[in-house]
Image (tube, rainbow, N blue to C red; front, top):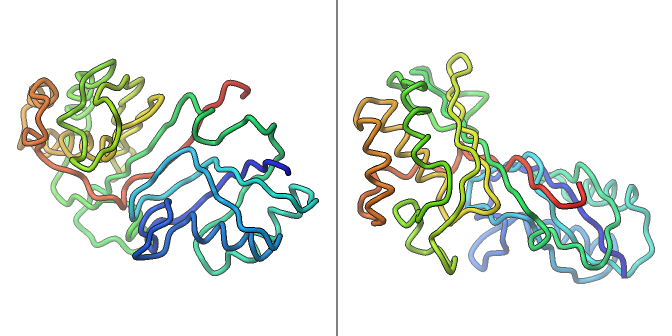
Length: 248
């Protein structure tokens, strides 16, 4: 049995999330079925993150265990062939030790959230960014974001369906920048709560719109109450960017 680490790139628009779903298509199911067509084996895909419906990935690490002798490059090529026309690509495939785990060996995850800050409709970027037509003050959003960096109880920014045992997380990075007509929010942590990134972005956007004062983000955090959340940003602007491992 060989453990293959796969790096997945995908457009989350047509999927109900990364994890297998009983009521709709998922990235996990598509990859598992592709592996079955290549190897004739039923496998389980394990990924570093659990993205929601509509969330994208630039480089999502995952792994599968395969009994059939096959070279990593051949497996990658075969999977990409069988994944078509689904918007999923295997961009890398390497062998890993049996104790390496895409999720449990991961020591850091980073996300990007893209806000298209323009009035004109999105064409090329439709479903790949959150469109906010009113002007956003990215500098004010960045200043407000400082209150969320570090170790905190993120209950306010946690989905009511979150299954994490504790709402306490350590946020290593939360930066906001403007690039032409796009506002980009970069964040990193060892792990995140369900909807945490989208909830943080939504509140920062309220600051950028002028509907919240900068200090209200800190007040929402201190409330430790989901009812204090101002806005949960939509899924289409969120991208899983990178996962970190001790051996890399």
